[in-house]
Length: 321
Image 1 (cartoon, rainbow, N blue to C red):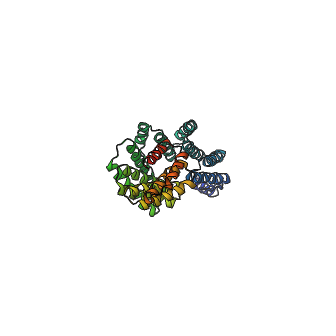
Image 2: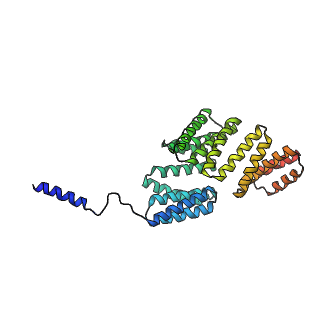
Image 3: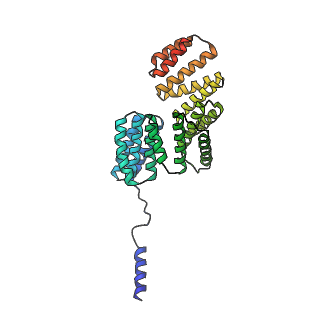
């Protein structure tokens, strides 16, 4: 009898508990941190790296205030990405060391993945391809987005090593097609990984001079970047489509595509990309019109170019005129 009474009392105490099992806590500081983080992502997409870093740092401080370590690391990864884009290698290496220490403690798979992807981008940028390959081979996560990113980076790596594999290109494209189909059914959500996959495949086919396959991939990249409103990527897609169409001898359409990419790069303040695109725009315009006024335009462009390889390309073009 005593035992029954004890059980009943325990049930009543549990039922009257003031602590709900799944309490919903409205934390205004976390909401502010999340908004700052999204603002940083928006700035990053428009290639405004300094402003993006600023907002990532603000979100990091807000997350630190509420001791949200996952949010802190996520923001630090954002800051590191901006340092990489701004070519601030010492700052990048320092914050990556901090991130490495904390991701080991948190053991969050998606944070480790983002850390590894930043290392891969860093190695690619500095042409440390052996180190890049080591990181790729160590990554065992086969979650769909992560797998697609791994396949894409392997395309980029094999391209740089002059070891392009048709079978790997085929597998990457098929995986991207599958995930794009799932995206249409709202079962895959990473437009950026899809865009990068089609870009990597398109670039590889371009270097193989397989124009139709390259164009197919860049057309798909363009469609995805349009959905994602990634204007830099859209300009890049138009630029490569122009190069491919030029190889296919449709000079008028190529000129149209270069005109579009030039305007977009100009508005994005991407000077090097703008100058490359402007050169191709002038080149195709000259092929169409034989207008000698374009020669002076080319001279003016050469004088404004900082990229020595592009300057040499323009000088060689001028020698033939």
